[in-house]
Image (tube, rainbow, N blue to C red; front, side, top):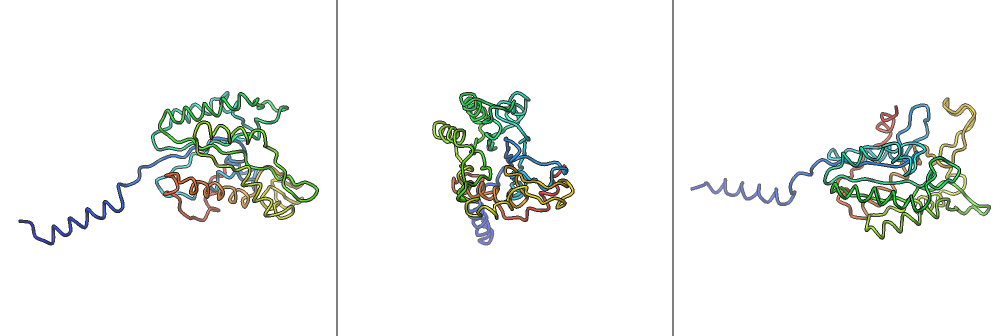
Length: 260
């Protein structure tokens, strides 16, 4: 006969296991996109992609693998064989966050991707992600800083953002409408203060930009952090399983450590 103490201890252990569930398995979150998301070389600092601070908001079960590259569109990301290794590495439970548009939408660029091809490429990313039992997440392209004469934000990605929204609805894919949300954030900051979120530098302010910089597309460290926080809030709002792995951490040291 078992001693009552051991029966009680066994029952308590069982209850604890039921309460906390099995340990979470390790997963990878892949980021595929352009320069607004990518890891920057030191010579570009303080320009910062929002994927850099994004990495530090998760627990130890999550690896964020940022494959975003400067200047890439859906077309060039595929043509340069950047997508294929991601698809091959995916495992069940992983995520792929897909944010393109800045370079797809400009007809004068080699990266230009007509609307029909943009749609087809995004659908390919979705289907190949799902084939590996991973979860695709679509993001509309993050806003550029563009205010009109009366201080109202103007959209610069309207056509391609609309395509992303339509595809997300048709394919039943989680959508993070980063274009709209970042426009709202910039409007909240206003014409002058929104410059703090971008790589705006006075001459002599930073050795990487001795002549100064007025970049309304790429982010400062603060701007990248703010954009990452928008994405994190949507992960929670969408009730993705990934939300259970979010923690609050200081980002600056890790952002600095990622610079190459």
